[in-house]
Length: 575
Image 1 (cartoon, one colour):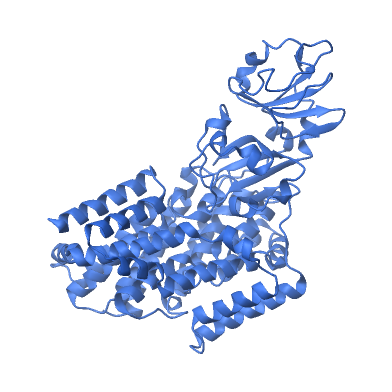
Image 2: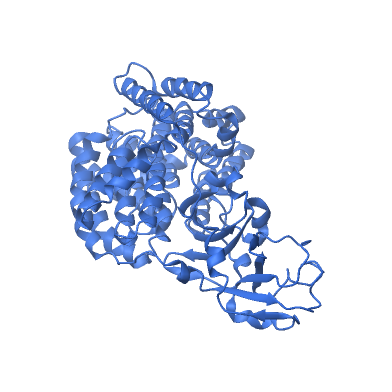
């Protein structure tokens, strides 16, 4: 009975992840807690999963990557890769991002190139951003540290098998697969749309501005008292007063004669302003003033804004900024902006206050596309020392002279001692949700094993493929992981597929390594839709893509990638 209850709970978890009704961290930790209460895992076992050495290594790597994000090397490269013809620029961009993503978190690589690609006017960003995202995936899956997915698989391997995967063990199959897939990606990139960056006038087309006329009864009263904070579909964004911009506008702000009030939201609701005597609409004369403090950003996968509305998070107080417009893919979302649930990857066009750049939560929540905001960067000496330290840690780990965890811990100590990173920054950017998801998933895997559900799954896989052999079971595990990574997230896919793959290998009595690699490569095979991988979400709105754009490029890329993985993996890692 307990066995079937566990299987039903896993099906329920998968349903919640696909539907998006709850955040993955909440779903995973709730199920792990249920297993604890039911006795499937004990307290010591549960806590041990959250302190898994491979998981701790992943956390350290992501925190060290915060320093690598701030080296000027990536910005310097981004300015030089986009020179020359569009075709040659695409090749250089893909090759460079793939090589960098093999050692640096691919989100950091895409972040660095995203702003430069979006700001330049020579090559349509839509011709470059999908190749950038796909190339970062292909590069990341070639090494242990290239993607968090490989480190997640390493965590499960250590927990289940008692051994860890090597730094370049993934390269034996990953590099040939990446090279083969690159050719198809370059070919299909020619079919991408040609969306040039928008002009500022187009971005500002949904502003409404109104003059406060002499003698108006609104003069001398606050915004709250005049009822200007609760309009139907419109929001008071800015006030221009004698050439000075007041942004954001607080409820206690007193209106003065000749003020210019700038509204945003659903322009079809303009009639809401007609009930205010002394307000005179005048087209788009506020455009030039607003253009001086506009910043365009993409919501980060780490952001606390995902799943919430602007009203729920009190956006203006949090960032001293007002949202002018929201874009999701090629579609600008208008209307009740404060009531639109935000998603990772949404573009926000913001009019920012004077101290916007001082807010410490910007890096966690946003990737900058345009505007005058600059990320704090390391000095040349700090950059070279950080890069030298990281390369040394990777080299020593590859040569098995120093465990990766030890090297990263020493490097972290050096970065803190040299004030390259601060304890406050580490607290702010700690990947808490990822830690909770993986730790909980490891506990869930223990529950699968102790309840007998894992053995039942293995028997089912063996019965399903008994007439076709172990190779067919290997293919089945790969496509199971691929399906999960396209419908949920890559890390969740690896966490859900690994126990099935591991127990299937045991049921057939073969070496588990090809099945481990099937999960690792399958979890990185997210090419068809933008919602399964964080870098796809990052480029989706800036490139103004549609779902069809990902399908046209991603389908041949996915087929080539999968065929190469399924052919080469058993040759390199025999059963």
